[in-house]
Image (cartoon, rainbow, N blue to C red; front, top):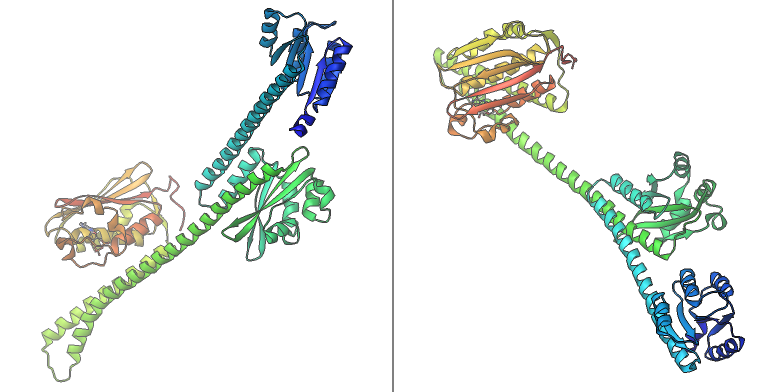
Amino acid sequence: MVNEKLRNSILVIDDEPDFLSIIRHILTAKGFEVETAATAAEAIAMSGKRFYHITVLDISLPDMDGTELLTMLLRIQPDTIAIMLTGHSSVQNAMKSLNRGAFGYLEKPLDPEYLLSTIDQGLEKQRLTMENRQLLQELEQRNHDSNILLAVAQSISQSLNEKEIITRSLKIIVETENADSAWVHLVTSGAYNFSSSFGLSENIIGELEACNPENDIVGSVFNNNRPLEYQPINNIFPISPMLNSLTRNNYHSYAGIPLTIAGNNLGVLSVANYRGYYFGKREMAQLCAIAREVSIGIQNARLYEEASSAKALRELDCLRTQILANVSHELRTPLTVIKGYASSLIQPDVQFDESIWREFLVAIDQDADNLTELVEDLLTMSRLESGALELKKEPLTFEEVIKSARGRLEHLAHKHILNIITSRDLPPISIDSRRINEVLTNLVENSVKYSPEGASITLNACQNGDKVLVSITDEGIGIPAELHQKVFSRFFRVKTPASQSRNGTGLGLAICKGIIEAHGGRIWLESEPGKGTTFRFTLPTIESGGNNHG
Ligand code: ADP
């Protein structure tokens, strides 16, 4: 208690020297540090120089009214506890003083005990006010810090890309005035990489990238796994090329914070400031909290990347197995047929007459064709998927394409009614006619396969804006709406009895899609189950820029 009082200072203002002397005596004896002033001017000058916990002032001073002085002193020192004294008590004066911010009002002749107890009460009030203020300040600071942390966390959670996470966090660190510049070194298998920075000039980025971080302060932060701060930098670590570079570029303070998660060191967050801003305890704590968030973000991004590539590999593996299974199945069917007929024919003890021989040979021939076709399709598919399909494009009109395809299409649809309608004066298109023929053949073949004999199939070509639009319409079994996209996937076949009763590999439409897209066009279908299907595709005209040779 005495110790506390020793620290408390009191300014007593009164124009009576005897009174001042007595008061000084009493208060000093109680452990206060006492200073006195005989005039208002003197008191104002003294208050401007230092803080007084208590100001005791007489209401009647020679050079100024005491209540006026009270107002002025409280303006200079709003936290001082002002106690008014007067020899002429009046309620009016008391009210005036209290209204102007005096803590208490005492009458002369002064009762020392009463003065001391008023001073004690005043000091208690002052202590509480200051404590509250400090608490409020701390609260505001914490609120501010948590908001920044929240901003970092939110920003990090919006991305799963390591570089983006780091850049966003650095931006927040600099923009929220935690530092003038910030950058990150990531360490992978002992190699230090300058990842990102914010607030650094190109010049200094170049210098920092040229430094050997592992032998510099960054390496020290990383290896010791402890934050380090240097302020001012130039006096403390002159042999560090990194700090030297910062000093040359007018930076005054530096702090390095390890980026660590679950005992795993990921790198170092560095921050630097120009003169006038230091990394205090609070700032370091805040930067460490931000570094923790950044580390979590980096770790998440890495886990996500690992998981995605593992998933992609698993999917690829699955796909490969599936393709292999499909291919093996598709190859086996005609091979089994060929093998069966061939084995029968070469049996030495069985005599076939000529018609059977012929029948078997025709079947072998047909399945050998099917096999060739299947292998061709597989090759085309794999070239399309690897981007290795070379298109031999040349400028042609669609009429010219139809001219070369007509014979084959009519042959395919000889049990159907095939209508081919092409608009006149279709603009030229740059296409590989062999491949577009393949598309037309596939689509007409499907229409034939999936519609009853005698039904009509219509092939129509017209201009649609800067494209040529081709459609093939049939009156067949149709395709359910939910499968309109799926039928373009390789090996996909609609699993209805009507569809499955027809031979097929599920490769035709995937190849059509690949070829049309390689030409810069689009393919889609409209269909109503039981009524028919229309496949449509577009090809860009040469004028629209669709003349690039692929
Ligand atoms: P597929 O060799 O099985 O005919 P496609 O890739 O050409 O392979 O076609 C995929 C599936 O789409 C077919 O199995 C069939 O179920 C369906 N399909 C294709 N064209 C038609 C059509 N014109 N009418 C009805 N279904 C069709």
